[in-house]
Length: 192
Image (cartoon, one colour):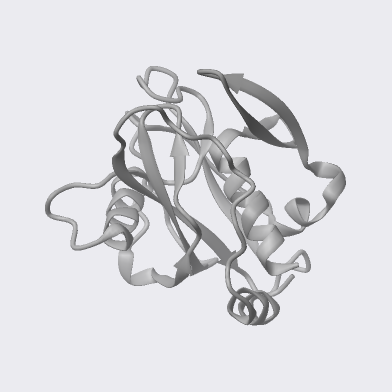
């Protein structure tokens, strides 16, 4: 899927309810992530999704695949600013190189955050500067991988007496799962 087709589909309809049904039992802190779609017109596979693998020593979600992002800070004007600031801090993605398209619904996650996914397009010509303390690896996956239903797995789980879905998108040696996979699932459902 190329940039023009994605933009047309993304803006065509309103967001549907999320497939992510986890509800956290206590008050939540605000956070945001950046779902950055890489546009390289010369790539036959179309858009790619920018992902990171978190450092193994982190308190929350160590070694998991995630989007760049994190906790909202008082100096952030809004959650878009949070996502852009965090992407800059974690992987050196300059805010001026990001074209924000919109947001997906908020997600409640097990670590006690309500996360707002910010969807954006970036140019393929980026130089990244990884913060080794937070990010072990930066990589990308063709959006086409997530569009193929055979690549999506889902299991039912119970936590705190509540039933919820856990989504998975295996890719090569990566296991993309949890809220990251749920966000990708919702994005794909929105553009189908």
